Length: 425
Figure 1 (cartoon, rainbow, N blue to C red):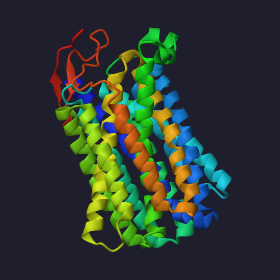
Figure 2 (cartoon, rainbow, N blue to C red):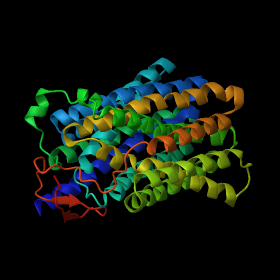
Figure 3 (spheres, helix red, strand yellow):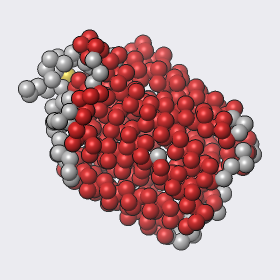
Figure 4 (cartoon, helix red, strand yellow):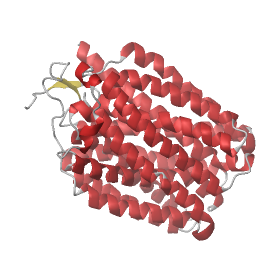
């Protein structure tokens, strides 16, 4: 019974972290039109600030993973959530583009650390036969956070002029800090911190002869997944308002439809990962992402149901291609370096992908925002499909060594329950 409760708490803690991450991070894209007007910024400046934040998140993610392997997943997760909540709220105080960039960089450091720490915590509780859908369900909490930030955006921007409304929106970002009290009191790691690991750095093993190929390919995959996701969704609110000339209600409607698609994508991809395997499922959603992004950009305004349906499919595909990264990256690295490995490949990939928003911001004035988004998305999809077939198939892999296990054979299922398992040597 005790281990059942601990597994469920780990699921709740990881979901809280990632959902609140989605809540705070998506605020910037929603607030960007107001920020550009309030601080007299250009689209290019907005793109570069997004890039700076993502680059910082790459560094933060690497540090977060190393700290999680040395001091424990749950402990690090709690303080990471506290940090990104505080820095998100402080963004509201920015008076110049430089100040805005500073707060976004600091928020990015914490934002980057959350995903690999929470993913490692949950993956070690997840059943090998249902790990894909369990981690897909975890990814879906990002969509919940995004939905909540969209509701906040609609309410705040309905009551205040855009030039000041964005400040109130970021102040709401302090609320996720409350989650730290639950995590610190109730959540524990499945695998206790090994004192021997504390004495050495797990980082060099990522580049050992047996691991370096996996590390490099996983970085490329992490780049592709995030270049698609962040390049599209960071600029989607601005694109709808500037190039599609939609008002607040029209923009919010499209966003809610896209978020609904994301929820379907997270859950459906998780199921397919367990049934079809990692490589086929990734390929389906990468191909779908490329096709739907192109269709959405080229589809004329005013197509009614058709354009809404395509927006839904954009969400399904873009979210679906990212749903498996948590389970897959956990399976690619051994326990002793798992959080470090997941953090490193995901966040170095994120650092490279960060130049996607910069590309879009710079080239918007040359070829248009829509075409810029389409180029980044298409190139990322093609590269990702190639990369995933160069990596091994890991579906059903047991990632817990018997000597590491502290729960005596209980794992979390995709519905939050636990089951027995046998450990293979």
